Picture (tube, chains in turn brown, red):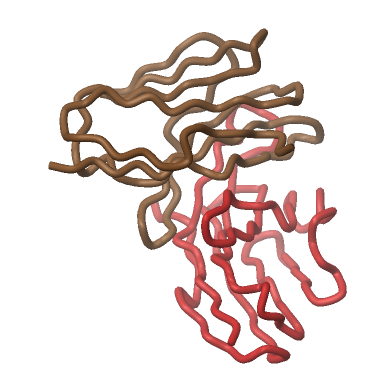
Length: 108
Length: 116
């Protein structure tokens, strides 16, 4: 079993829909990151969380430390949100462990 | 501010050949990471440098992979000899300081390696 599990692996939705991507982890962590990867490989850091909730524009990230679970939400989704979203946790020895990613496709 | 630079962007080689990748981190960033990302998977850490010292290379296949960061700035990752299963995107990332709130990692565009 992977230390970081994301669901769903693939998600297709229509423009305007509310999107939720989930991340569960099995180890103790000091921080959790949500990353966005566009075709071509470039990765952008969206959020770093250690507790609670953060919001940036149409993106919202939440984390529940007790349940070892985090969610990334996108409101009013747009085709430009199409990308792979990766959850990564910082555990022992400050090493980042990555989930396998969720491929999101937003159709116009 | 310039981002993390990597070269080449693409490389195609035959198995058993050698290949080297170069990374120039963001100026002033002490920590540098090399990741391997196989298609359909998340990145896997290969090696992590703090300045010019190795912090973690536990997942680096040392029989064929090597990396160095001699002056604590640029880094090179080498594969010799390459195998088919090394086909992946090799990502370089840097962060200001390890283990602090300033350790957000900034990723380069990656080098896509295809081994035939």
